[in-house]
Length: 113
Length: 115
Image (cartoon, rainbow over all chains, first blue to last red; front, side):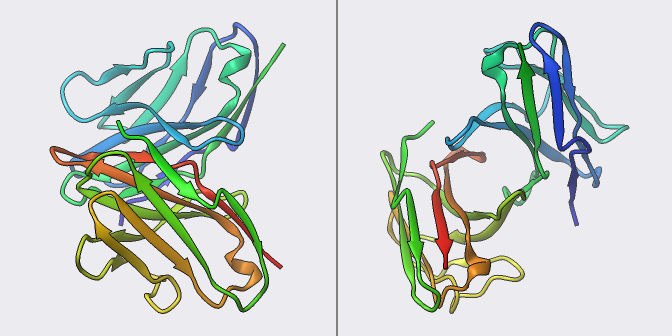
């Protein structure tokens, strides 16, 4: 069965520094990959997704993630974070035939002034 | 995307009682899902709500404990029955549209505390 690992439960980083949030999944079958963000006291918002094509996907607020099939990874990066990026970030994987999401345990990103 | 609302946003309930959570979407959607997010943990899929038929439950979840209805393409309810403190969680509904069934949008969640 598919599983998703987010190794870092919390990541503190100073404002304007780069950050990488790691996500690995277990099964190498054809998958869709997602990053969701949950701001304090809000619901989950879709940040970006990989379905097919280019392995590098970008969001409108400067995040990017790269699909690496050989390493079964989909790490999230941002070259310069802002205080407003403080949130919990969830990686999710869906086997292409099922449309069911398996979520990682989440990474709490705290941006420090 | 879709605008999704959930009622109630939060509730505190007594052990042994039941709570029904509503999920309303502003457009017709193909699929609706219910998730649970226990304190400090990730999201776990409870079931897929099927319009006009019984919901499809994931392993570890049963209809007697979590009855689900979906009378039309924009509305669903999840009932948490005979509650215990272990049911204290955030319950979220999510939806996906025809032609984009792989992409889910989430409601704001219902924060349930059972005392």
